[in-house]
Structures are given as structure tokens and as C-alpha cells.
Image 1 (cartoon, rainbow, N blue to C red):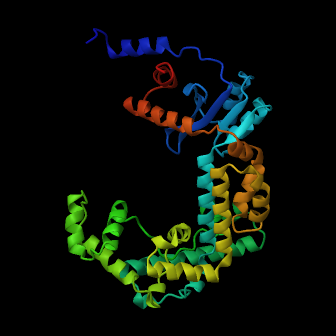
Image 2: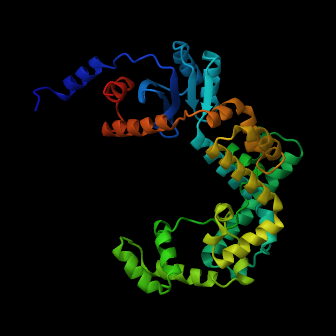
Length: 387
């Protein structure tokens, strides 16, 4: 109801700008997306006063270093696992304590175990008796995936032949015409799954279905009618097929082991409690644990790391590193070794980058309210000037 134009109102907001902030001693720093995968900025938060204090136009280490150099009183910097901000802090504030974000540490550890499973898929298939696949027993959709797997195996073999002769990744990319990312995945053993599992429309309703099944409700059509009342919009066939698969899963036999789950599914089943698995899943995981003991060791190492972060027992870090560096998660352990001081601080101190992540969520809301077209000064005025 104000008699002003949109442009006048925006000029007033920009003119007001951001108020001077109190000198911070503990900050969190992280990146945020102007446009995902294309352009990023940096947000800096005062963790003691729980408010954002600066937005930077990019996430280059030099930009962050220039801002940090003007705040020599900062004693603690919480950050993610990326090396750019670590380098900027080390150069601008060599006396400051860097704290790695605990959530990212937990997520990185889980992803390291998934990578270990992916590298071991050939041994897994041998362990569960599915090293060879009979195409005559596959459905039409599975046959298409299997043919794609055979093509991927040819590509993988060509890349491995080049790597075994000492050719660099850059040269392999030039010779084969494949992307750098694909070549790195092949050399890391991350392209060995035969069948790729898509997320089902039942994914969000599986806990309810499991509970109904455990209480004795086995009729697929009846489960569909009851699920429809709860908001499920899928067809009856989807629920009936789920019930059929679940019924077959209750009877472990040799045929149930012919189809190997995806690496992601195996990682989930190996880290779930045995009480949460069906009979056939239990048999499959038992076969994997017996046939691929290195995966069992990797799981124990990752579980120990999660417990160390949760219980804040930093004295266990050195023996953990010694064990992890000789396992399937050695690359993750090497990353921990390089960032050891920040990992120790994450375990021993109470500071975390969770507050910064929350401010990024608020920043996304403000940015989208302006249809993503606001410049940096207007974003600062609305996000920082209003707090």
C-alpha cells in the first residue's frame, strides 16, 4: 500500500545495506550455489552469535583468504572437507584452529564403504554363486541392462589395458575418447554393477508395508487398498509385485541367490541389523561375509570411525588410521591423515558447521523469493541486514 514503485523500494533496501557486524572469533564458512554446478558463492557465519555476517561472490580460495586476512582475531574456523577453504584459512590465519564438519565426516565414511563394496563386486558375485549369468533366465528389461553391462566391461578392459602399461589418465582420455570422470570411475572399480536398481514409488511406504507384513497381512490387493487411503498414488500391480517378492524372499533357496543386489543395496544390508533382514537377505549377506572378508573388515573400520565421532574419543584416531590405511578404505584414511588436525578438533570441540548449513537453507529461500535474479548486494541486504 506504499505509493512507491518496485525499483524505488529496491533502491531503499540496497541503500540501507548491511549493518556493521560485531567482531567474530568463531566462524563457519561454506559455499552456496548461485546456479547448481555452474556458479557458486561463499557464506560466512558468526557461530557464537548464530548469524551470517558476509557473502562473497565466489568460492575461490583467494577471495576467502582476502576476507579472512582482514579479521586476524578469528580463533576457530569450522568448514567442510573441501581443500579450498582449508588452504585459504591456513594462509590468512595460520594460528586459527580449523574444525572439520562432523556430518560431512560421517557421510564421507559411509560413502567410502560404498566405494569398497563397488570395488569388490566381482568377488561378491563369486561368493553368492552368481559369477555367471544365464541370459535365458532374464526378463526383457534385465536383458537390456545385462547387454549394457557387457559393453561397459569391454570399455573397462580397454581402459585397464592402457593403465597397466603406465599410461596417465589424461592420455587414456585422449586415446579412448571417454570422459575423465568415467576413466577415474573405471580405475577405482566403480563400474562393475550388472543390474541398476531404480527407486520404487513404494520407497517412502516400505516401513509401513514391513510393519503390516510382520503383523500377518500378506494379501497384496488388500495392502494396496489400505495404502491408497494413506495417500499412495501407485497402481495395485506395484503392491502385488512387492508382496510376491517379499513372499519369495521368506524362502531362502539356491535360486534366490542367482541375482546379486546392487552395490548400494549390499552396503545398506551389510550395515543394517540382522533382525531387519529377510531370510534370503540374511543368506546373501552371510555368503558375502564368508567369501569377501575384506568387506567385513572395511565395515568394522567404518563402524569404529562413526563411533569415534559420536563418542568424541580422539585417542582412538591414531590406531584407527593404522588399521584403515591397510584396508579397502585406505583412500578415505589417507584423506583423514592429511586433515588430521581438523579431524581432531571436530572430535574434541563443540563447534560444527551445522549452523552455516542452516543459514544456507535460509539463503536459498530468500534467493528463490526473488526468482534467483538478485545481485549480491540485495541478497546481503535481505539475508544479513534483516538479522
